[in-house]
Length: 129
Image: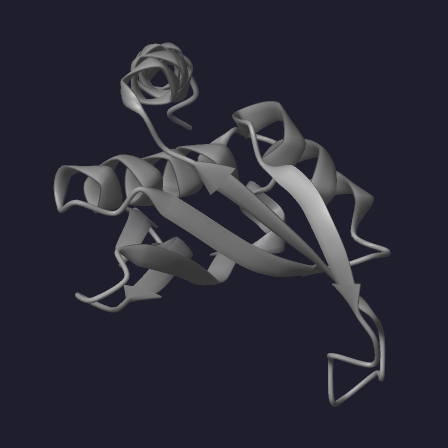
């Protein structure tokens, strides 16, 4: 898992789980406190997880996202995730459908993600409040 902290505590967290046998990563949480959204923190957290997982041998990641969460879907698409299929009534609290998205990791994808991570770190360093 990856976390981002500021002067006032935790501002975001993200995590994935994997199995040694399949080398598949499941992104299980990506969360940024509302006050800190739209500052590239969520993208940075996801990038960090993908790159960390790849360095440990994970070649494939997947996630579920609410179909109504267009901001998250746009982010995942921008990072290279593909839309796979829909899980009906996936979320117990709202009975909302989940869109399952995935990304296959290879050296080209990793290089692209590493460059994007460098760009974001540069932006984040100028956003210190």
